[in-house]
Amino acid sequence: MVTINVGVLLAVIVVMRLRRRTQARSRVEERNTALFVLALGIVIAPTPLGQGIFNVIEQLVSGISQAST
Image 1 (cartoon, rainbow, N blue to C red):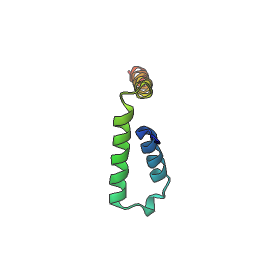
Image 2: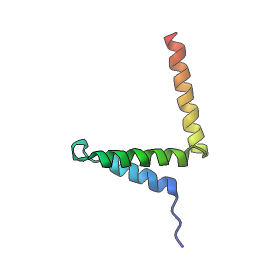
Image 3: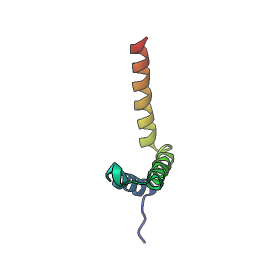
């Protein structure tokens, strides 16, 4: 039996959808892409990779906010 990692499958779908030209997309396709990205974020968030991405973004935001004050 073949198992497919849902996060990897969603990442591939998102990359393939985002590679299309903007003019060729309809509103329905844009909405579906946004839903796929949201689902990918929900799947990745509790993983160590998701926590690492969150920590990097948190450090960037705190660095930018300290530099602007």
